[in-house]
Length: 135
Image (cartoon, rainbow, N blue to C red; front, side):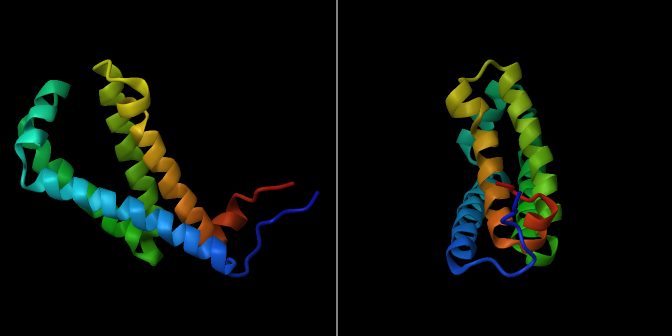
């Protein structure tokens, strides 16, 4: 049984794939945080439909921004990913409670979380060592 996880730096392709995935997640989350901080009418209306008090929009925007910044900084990226995973779990729960469409709304947090952790996994050799993929 061999393992592909090593402590050496990832290959160029792995590193850039990880950076692109992480970058896409970061851009999306920054956008999401920004529209909650303003907040736009679409945010207020969506919050109302989901049963989230509309005065929490800014708080949720700040939490999203904080987790995203932590994820974007290499030294704190794992902490940011862990915190954002919890946040996404809460979002998934709200959609389950409200009977939102499964593939487009409820599981969106899962898709985002998979992209976030995949990007981090591909660009962080220590994470690959902690969770090796074996053949």
